Amino acid sequence: MFMNDLLTQCGINENNFGSCVGGMDWITTDNAGKNVSYCPSNESEIATVFEASENDYEHIVSKATSAFEEWRKVPAPIRGDLVREMGNALRDKKEVLGSLVSLEMGKIKEEGYGEVQEMIDIADFAVGQSRMLYGKTMHSERPNHRMYEQWHPLGPIGVISAFNFPVAVWAWNAFIAAIAGDVVIWKPSSSTPLTAVAVQHICNDVLERNGYKGIFNLIIGKGSTIGEKMLSDKRLPLISFTGSTLMGRHVAEVVSKRFGKTILELGGNNAILVDETADLDLATPAIVFGAVGTAGQRCTSTRRVILHNSISDTLTDRLLNAYGQVNIGDPLEKETLMGPLLNQGAVDSYLSAIEKVKNAGGEILCGGKIIKGDGYFVEPTIAKVENHWDIVQEETFAPILYLMEYDHLSKAIEMHNNVPQGLSSSMFTTNVQNAELFLSSVGSDCGIANINIGTSGAEIGGAFGGEKETGGGRESGSDSWKQYMRRQTNTINWSDELPLAQGIKFDIN
Image 1 (cartoon, rainbow, N blue to C red):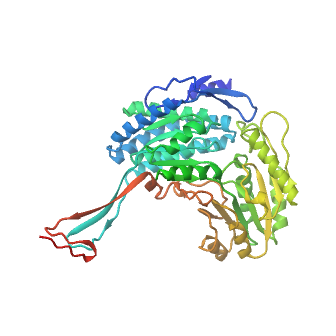
Image 2 (image 1 turned 90 degrees about the vertical axis):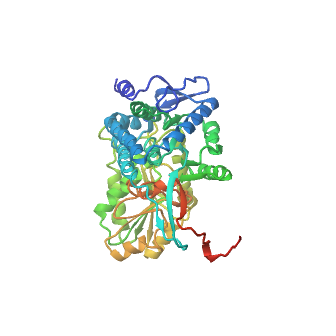
């Protein structure tokens, strides 16, 4: 009864169409394939989405391109008003949309609500940013000249999002792109199509009320067809991709061949350093939430803890005690702290990683097994390992935490940085020198570095993204808006002479 009521409130039917030009009717193709969404906590079928055809793709891109030609002319603060209404609409739908995220993806209800709150927060941020698309004024070397830069809308933006944050990542991109004067074509994860359909219903309501069409567009289809068309489509000057490093490398190669731009948010192998001065009352819950939250299926999940050997035993005991308190079960139940993995493939990856740890000589301190019954539940796991092992160098999207010790901080930083990924990092310390070293140019090599907070839970006001195999892209706050616009430098000669730059003489009669 609860599920039926929830789906109704989100506009989800037993069968749903998977492509839509924002503010217009859904495209009624029903013969290009079906995407059945399953609940990961009990493996039951939730609903079906009809996938888009290649003809649907062409229709959506054509309509979006036409919409962009008009949308770019709208003053940025007015574009911000549309995003403001999106934020308010999401406030009204926070509980039901957050619950749908939990139902379809498996994160606990609090995290589902938190994800929708991220959407609301980035909408608020974007509204303010719509009045701050600043360019610089520069001094010209030529007399009686003025030089400045300005930022113009870029075009239709392709957003390819992942299952673990099925709606928030879209909002990070879509709302900033919208105030920048761009329109968005969204291909969500095939594992979480229903949340995307629900968001598109909200978009349509807001667009229709304001008389706009084609600003926020949805296309659900296979990566091998629809996804590949997006990557190679010259009409999409920017592709924002969130997913695996392997797929991100492919995205970068295909898009760069046509001189398109990319924002890549790829894998993380995030570590927390805990020194001998750390407040363990702070460190313990931060580590547990970072490792166990979303069942370890965040790109910012805590994968490694590098702890000083003097506090190793004490912190390890604290972590084991805390793990014993993690209530695993239905993510929609209030008491649950960890829900299921996404699917059987994720469970298999978890089991494979555990086996590799054992084969390498690692010690499983707790967990390491699946939980029998319905759903894709596993035990959160802690293991003692060595940083250089192949399995530790990889990102496993599961609740597996690796512990390793150090004696000198320089060694800890070396271990921390010696992985292919570079997304999020953290250090717990009360020593200001250690903290500043970790944040310095010779400290963490990650895009995010924190002191006395964990690796997860990035705020929308800061630019989100990482280095190395994380992709190098940035989304959300700070000056990330510039990626959705094109820079133009302008020089104006207001004299009656024509001096050349660098003092060049080119005299003709």
